[in-house]
Image 1 (tube, helix red, strand yellow):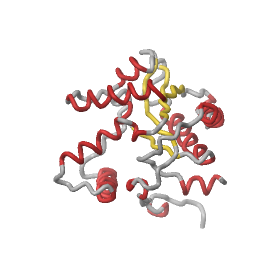
Image 2 (cartoon, rainbow, N blue to C red; image 1 turned 180 degrees about the horizontal axis):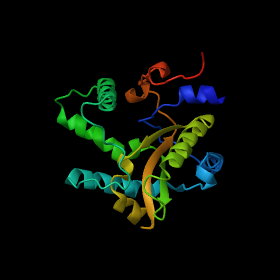
Image 3 (spheres, rainbow, N blue to C red; image 1 turned 30 degrees about the vertical axis):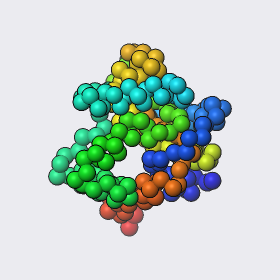
Image 4 (spheres, helix red, strand yellow; image 1 turned 120 degrees about the vertical axis):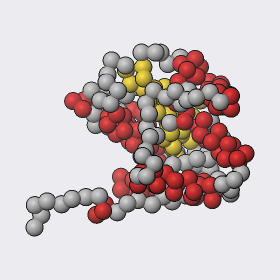
Length: 224
């Protein structure tokens, strides 16, 4: 698959087959993704890959905390858009599309709660990549580099027939990951990437999101 096809095909996968992803495949994906650009070649990313019983323990603990009403305490806040902004509106539109595909009525609190819980279970993917940075780095400094490596992981995954979903719900309770995945306090937990074989019969995976045309967000100077 060429790079343009991969960019067009990549989408967030929210339902996976139970088939495990071989460790050697994940190793190759991360080895290739480490070619992503970074400021001054600093390569600030670090990965913890979860599967099997460890992932099951993390899922269970995440859901227990969520259902207990424990407030999330993420170490990198990415979900914070002004209420009246276009960014919030895009998020709302996405939620409406997903709820329609999943047949979740607005007033059905039980179904909405069940959907929310799926995110804290990494959408039941067979493997998860946790992305961290060293705390010696500033909070915002490495984020551009992290975005580059995360996107690269998602694109390379397509080559192996895998789907991904970049999510913050899976790192909303960092104490869970520190306990079960042994991530030390010296590392800041940034994001999770669910990865596995897509279940194309899962309704949410049929979602095709819209994009703002580039002409609406681009200024061209000096081309006359």
